[in-house]
Image (tube, rainbow, N blue to C red; front, side, top):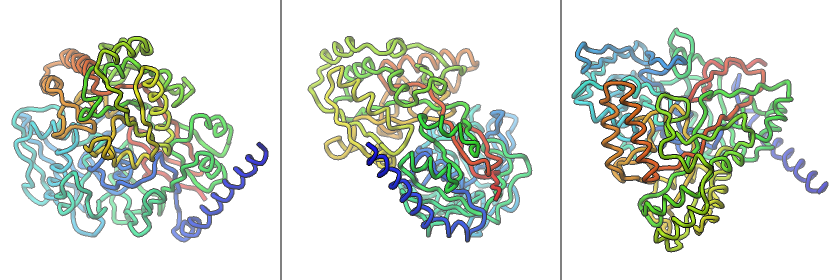
Length: 532
């Protein structure tokens, strides 16, 4: 045991030495640099291509938005101001002066129209907005005019939403790329520029201050306000080993760690050189998603048996461990929100029912087809779910094939509609920022569009889509609540996905950093300064 401990310490020391040799000289030469270990490594860099949060975070570094959400949940101007016609059918957005793309060309309304159209083809709220849209046009170089078929109250909330697929603006030549294909360049108008020459997928991503960026004058607030960059450079470094990253943070080799493992928080909390804080106070929903296209989960009876087998508390105990940071919750639209309800989740709220799961599985016609579960081992907040649920399913009588991978492989593979035998999958797990799933329109996972625009897993449910249409037309909050409860009932009945509880994920950084902003789409790296 002592030999193993010494070997581990030497390995960590060697890793830190290699890190210092590889990155410190560049950082010193570049000026004031923030070095961060994010929750995942970065591979997919088109923020419209995926809902992965690491790609969203990358998007906020280099792109900007027309409008944005502040800490009071209010939509604020960002790249543009807006006016709404008296009949609520025409929204006119006017770009502010001096906006430039990173290649030096001016931002135009045509660029923004193309960006909105690309985003609107794949984002849940964007798709619904486009259903209500008669036209989006550039009526002059600085003016975007959006005309509706009928009044729709979520126009600004959709375009200004802070997370999931964000309505990032990009040049027309890039925005005209089909949304299922990656854009060929990373050119935005945001506060940082992407350093393509130093990008090593899965290893390192580098951003430099955009010296031409003119921030708004309002104070920074969530994703709104002045995005003032106070450092010269930000480097995201991949460190899959949690202990290595912790040591690097404590020694000052890195400045920021997005998701330290929960079991290591007591060590960090005792280090006076560090600050520990939950930046996303609204937390996350963690969930399991089945593939509706292939056996055995194309059979609703099998899906129901799997639901009966699952226990939220077991998942959260393994994922977090400290009940200070988690809560069981069967509400699809997040506990303690206007649309929270327990309807349909009675068995899940009781902690599962193994006997009922076994009986339901025996009666379902399940033929022993192995359940292929993708299990990423490189993300602290996604390691536990597939392992715990796999055992719960085995206990109920399922055959399970847990396939170890990394998260970026999951992000790529989950988009494949191939059969599990051909490299596809039956089940994966992910986490949503609570703000992304707090109503039926924002919640991308609750859709029933199937192969035609549906989220990974491709659930097809016409009733849910009809109820969502009713939700957006509902005349009052009380009516919306009733419809949201009906949607949740149908979602549980068809097992659209399985909510596995809510949790918060603290971040840690050295006290040499100041100005770290909280919010539902954190971390962001504007407004942060670093003392020498």
